[in-house]
Image 1 (tube, rainbow, N blue to C red):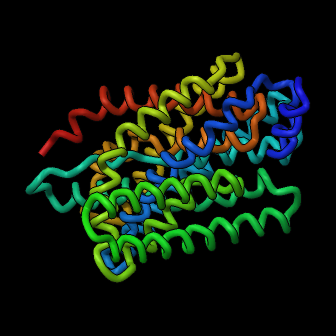
Image 2: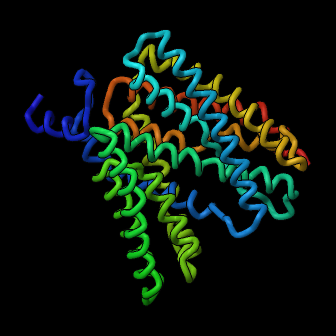
Image 3: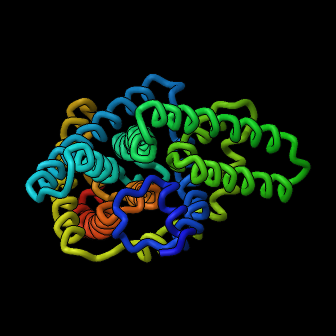
Length: 345
């Protein structure tokens, strides 16, 4: 190992020196962070608190996400303790990371004339990403901070810096002379969000969500403008994330065992969380809600990728691989088992 490689790895607080991770991953992390920040921005745009129904659905979605985090994290912590993978604090951190990844859901776009109960189910699936991104941002700060004070400083920076970047972006967007100039500003600000998050070692998803909420409630039409411009690059960024996640994944017995546990515990946790959420919303049936909660989408995989790129350890690579395999399996389960309920009238 060269001196430059050793310096790069020490800067990110790496403790598993036997992991085979190259410096090319470090150089690509700011690019990946831009894609994750864009995903977080869309989540922030979906946070609506103006109406009472919106606030109620946010609470219900957060409850469902919390149930998933707790169930998956508890099950994985028990497995880690049984497998004797490390210290209690280290295994607890990895278990919570898996719980955060498992709690994400993918809300599909509703069709015109969609029934109110289906719209409510889609909103719950859309809003249940908010709590995981918040918890994930805190967890990522504590995994990179040298002590509690440093971790709390990173949490504060992860909130303050995106607000400052979003404010600067808002001033630029509102004063753009034409669409082409505004598009350049949007891309530049999103790149700045991801780059700053990568430099500080905070969650790009959390930074993007904070900026998205700021733009949604700022005067003018910033959210509508940015939403339209970001959709042009959304799919290329998702493809980039998938390619990099596949390249960073490392197959191992630990990853395979974790992927099986991840899929089973996530399925049980989502069914339990969906059932409890449906009890709080009498117009929803568990089948309607479950059909939107089971597909995981990209957020969980994105957080696992950001955690791996910040911590760079053998176990974080296994977690990333398990989440990638679990995401594919969960999507297949949702497509096969829940096609009927979602398409039903």
